[in-house]
Image (cartoon, helix red, strand yellow):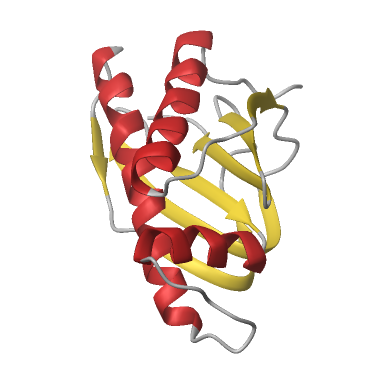
Length: 165
């Protein structure tokens, strides 16, 4: 059985949310933004930003990329450069803020669509492994890929499986 995806309007809102944050706050203009199938709820990436939410559905906004791109994003935000020997805590802080802004912007569309959403604080994992609960009955997984000059950034929304009352 295939996992459901967000409806078209919410995918478009996620694309717009990511684009607005990257252009206005990071000063990076995406070359392309497209929806791609999210095949799994298991991630092993160099940098994973997570922001959980509750409301009428529980889930997670997931932003994934490479060290190089996370450092480029953080560097643009903080107007500095992060080399190979950079302290990752500053990069994680800036990257977490990008996750927070994308999720906050997406929340506006989610609420406008008639849903409730309360956001948590972002968490950034460096060279980590994450397994979300978005595989069962009623789970929803959607992802967009953002092509930047420096490489790709993946932004996903995962809604947990529905629990039976």
